[in-house]
Length: 290
Image 1 (cartoon, helix red, strand yellow):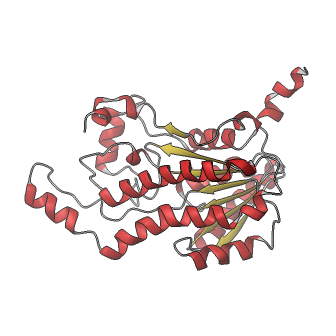
Image 2 (tube, rainbow, N blue to C red):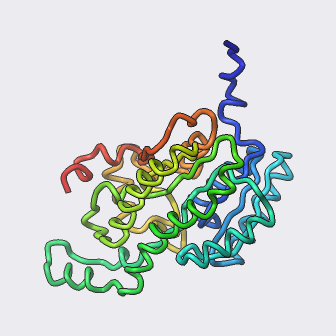
Image 3 (tube, rainbow, N blue to C red):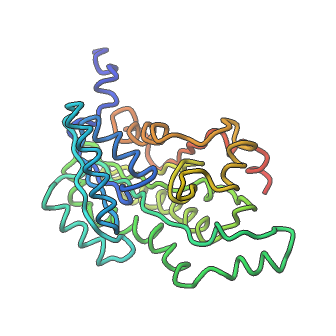
């Protein structure tokens, strides 16, 4: 037995991997793109807003060049909310890669959780729950469930050319419990469905050595959790200050690390699991008893 296989530079190496991150232009998606590219991976990031993903790619590529990391980021505009959109993304990606090692289904959105309500006032609660548009409700499932499903299925031919292919679905702690102050049913149920999708696809693709796992993030800075000025929305700030044992939001490095681990030899025995990266939030009474 060679102990060289335990060397961290190979055990956790992503150098030379081809990685695709949906919603990779902002928030934790951008953090993951930085992590992979700065460690030598070729990263394709997708998003609906071309200017956003191009700006992110330019920023990361400059850092990669400065650090001589060998990695790069390629922006691909696209929308995973439809089967046709997924097919278009595949066709563009095939111009840059013919093998895919890591697919990270990260694209997501939330609609009306920022609408305030008093949870002890039934009229206000009913008004908040009714306020979501039916199109937004349907899109929640399209983006968080159908999108990851079609992305995973469409890229199977590219996965088969990889020696350690993995799909990583970025779900949410909202799949595990309900924050009554936020009270966003459509988002939470779609994320719970995405976690179940992870298990279903893991079982289906297991014979072909394609692993499927999920990361369930807690509170991280993103467009969903912060204001235009970069500060956390009040419910999120209260969670950081009073509820989460770490007493702070997570950092991009703290989400990129577990994701990269799942994508390397270090995580090659993980399959069909959902890993909570939440600073201990799930251990608190607010999570266990709501």
